[in-house]
Structures are given as C-alpha cells and as structure tokens.
Image 1 (cartoon, helix red, strand yellow):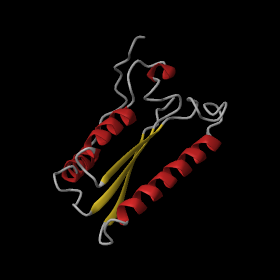
Image 2: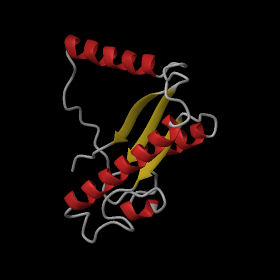
Image 3: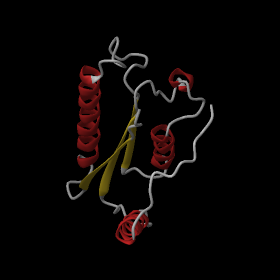
Image 4: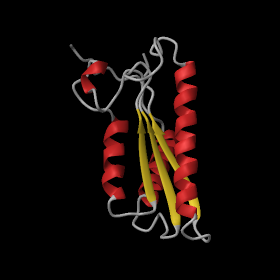
Length: 147
C-alpha cells in the first residue's frame, strides 16, 4: 500500500511551546519514584475495534497495537511491583464479544467498561486490605484511529 508524506500544516511558536511543555510533563511523570511505595496503580488497556493481542491477524495488521505493547510492559512490571495491576481488554468485534459489535459497538463498549471497573474494584479492595494507609491511582490507555 503506498504511503503519502503530505504535510498538513506547520506549528506556530505558541503551538511548538505547548508541545514541548506537554513533552516535559510526560518525561517528568515517568521519573523513578513517580509512583509512591504506598500507591496502587491499576492499568487498564482498552484496545480498539477488531484488535486482540491474542489474535493479531484479526485486525488485518501483522503487528500488535500500542495498547497491547504497553500492557505487555505493565504486565512485566507487575512481577517486581506488588502495587501494580495491569489488565487488557480486547476491542469490540473480537472473540467473546457481542455479535456485530464491530459495527454496533455501544453495548460491548459499556460491558467492557463495566468489566474493567469490576476488575479495578476487586484489585483495589484486595490491595487496600493489606494496609489502610495506602493510596489508589488509576491509569488507562486507549487509542482511536481516525478513519
């Protein structure tokens, strides 16, 4: 498939400064110690339509999505961090989702969000039961590709 390298526009100085500030905020948030020892983090990775890390070919793309890759990194980090729980939620239109949910995703999206909420509540409750002075934090990632 041919690709296009057309430039849609250029950033002005104000837009460039905003992007640089956002970049620095992301870098600062990623520093060691950004998550305190007494803080619980629940990572919920919601994948997009027809995206399933267990069935990559379903989407027609031979590569895993960013959501799946970040989940894999979070899952690896769980082995050395008892304060982190990572869960992955496949996209609509994949195995075990509602029939025709790729075309009519609302019901499946709500069901998936409810499952993620239930998973979070259980994981947070289990974690809090070990020490009442702990703090809860939530981080979710999802991407939407424009058609």
